[in-house]
Length: 159
Image (cartoon, rainbow, N blue to C red; front, side, top):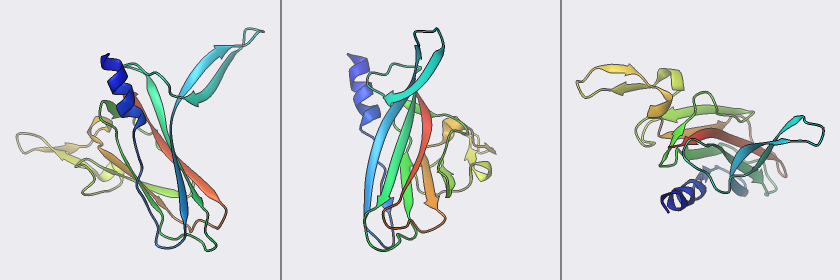
């Protein structure tokens, strides 16, 4: 039964989206790569809805933002918390035309991943690691034209 409640947490992730102008349609998906063997013996990798996931499984969090307005959407920002019971997979962020920032304090402050530091219990500082990331922010560099969409996301592993 423990896995069922964990799966529900993984799938229930939402990505708040902000834009200065325009009307946006946002779709969040939790996906998983699944390997299958074709009739000729070749391995195929397919991306499918996550369905049931167990500890150790890697999932892909995908957010699709579509401008359904008549004007370009400017200053579009997608904030993604790293879901509870998962850990962020290093260097797995994706999204063309975006600048990705990370947070290690629950989304209070964001910076480039390389600039992040964590304070240890003894007061010393160290460079942040993937396991320290609590939130990701995708900042769209250019306005999103009417009728167009962009996809952003990251990978995480269920604990």
